[in-house]
Image 1 (spheres, one colour):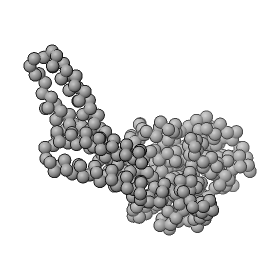
Image 2: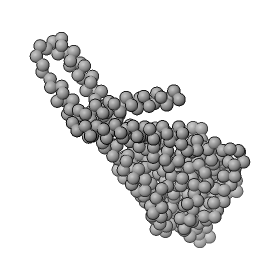
Image 3: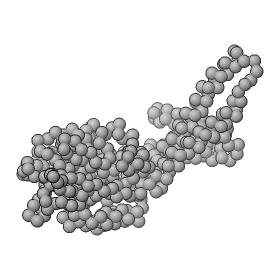
Image 4: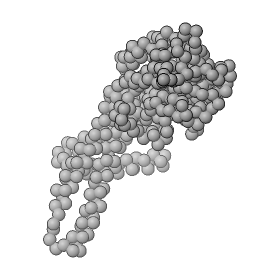
Length: 408
């Protein structure tokens, strides 16, 4: 409770400070009242949702939206305050200077403060509006990203083989069936040879997928649909009444994937065959650094494959690739991961620049990387969780074409 009181007090101080900027720049009282009511509603709803509403730690849709509106308002307040605080420091210094050295006023401080307040509000409105737009439209702004990767030892029959990768569905966050229908249709439109799903089908419980399972059951690929588990699929973020209930939830999720036509790989492998040649598809359970579940077992998954096989690995968390896979005795030609979501926020200029705060947590956080002759694609995710939107880092459908690299 003390932490809540402290948090609310800080929020209200920030809101009061931002209100001063609004009053300085805009002389219409009704605008001031709208800001006051909006600021109070946002903090009130956030406290209600996270302190009293909903089933404990489960991140419900109302909680997600309460969080989304809160960070939008905080971004507005903080940017405004940066400008006003710097102006207050300037006024303090110039005021002291004038009092000591100047007998006649030389600065129009009120005019400058109004200009800075107007500038601050204009700049603060950009992230505020972007975060709101990300909640309204950005989270379903699906992008198909295509990559072509070359390998010298790719079996000839697989030259031109197309893989569609999706990851991080997070069905418990969905709230628009038509948009999900569009996303699923977009996956099928790629007409790839195989579809690979790299984990986090739900946020917490298998039941979250019930309203959407009929849509994802329509996914089609000639060589099948394969999947692995992500950290959210195990139900570790729910306070279950009994351990048996938690175990039963995971069993239900596995059965659900089977009913949808997904071949779930649990530290095991399959062979994809074409014209008498084959490549090994390896799937491990979640393995993540920094306290995440480490159920992935490469040794078990590859116990019955040959070292000379061309290998594609499905592993949800890219930290697994960084810390274990690229240094393993086996050569994994291509690893497919997700997990990071690109933090659902950042800036990307295709082919030139990409940035997100998540890069401070994950070295490999979005797109294709190569280390020691091995590739990884980190999918930005199909769904969303936490902040119920996306800004700059859009939901992704990856299409990877394998090519035989010429030796000449």
